[in-house]
Image (cartoon, rainbow, N blue to C red):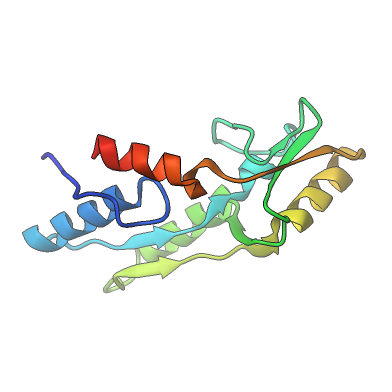
Amino acid sequence: MLITSRRSKYPFPGTEFKVAAVEKLKSIGLTYTRFITGTFMDYFGPPAAPSKLLLISMLVDFAANKAVVPGDGNQNIVTTHSTDVARFVTAALDLQAWDERYVIVGQRLTVNELVAFAEAAAGTTTLHFPSKPAWLTQSYRQQVRCRA
């Protein structure tokens, strides 16, 4: 089954593919649900924290002792640990009917709070690099449109 997407009208890269997938599921009448989790908390924990995910550095790089803070760092993010998502999904399998979507929120915090937690867990302070995410820049949006 091939899922295609229209030109992106969404602020986050990849969103149009999620929307296209949901539209396709609706069109064929398949029973489905979506679990919306935010970013997996596993990506922000120290390397010794238990996780089954292939860990990548996202905002906080423990190995390099650095953090990239978009804007002023006061933007809210939602994180949920993968094991909590697994328990929730497992429980949902026993439901008689599914809602169209379930939103799972483990922790809502700012990027600055995330970095402070990471520093406390690592027992050190990190070198902060303020940045403007690429997807906010006009040139990035134009590049994405050109590829669509």
